Image 1 (tube, rainbow, N blue to C red):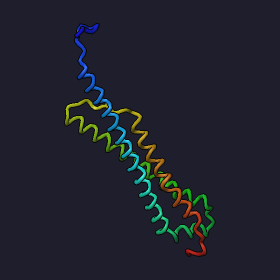
Image 2: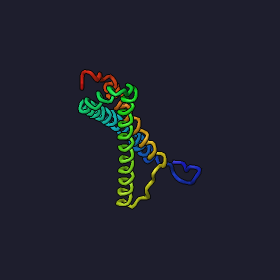
Image 3: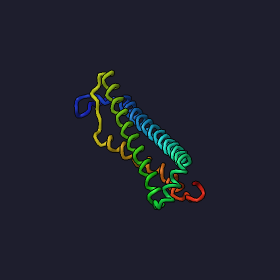
Length: 151
């Protein structure tokens, strides 16, 4: 074998193993991203179901609000604001749990923790978006409540 410019003999087996490790890491990251996306959709659907139950339980309150003149958009806005608050709270708690988990695992392994600063606001923003999305249909349902039927 001939020597490379650095004075070392190239190791093809090591290069192949490194390539396989890189591909495996990319595939694993892709699988984790798909699983996280599925879980996010399931959490959004679950939150929407909880919001629908909230609308059903508060039918008399919604009807009373509509009877005293509250506009449909204001009733819908109430539920969207509730969804946004729950989403922001969930995103913040998720970001906190992720940060604490990262710190704990890093400390237990003797690693230096690496936390990308924009991930925390991204987690909170994703929580906000999922909270609002989960509240849209229940808010629409609440805003269409006819006071005469439910008082």
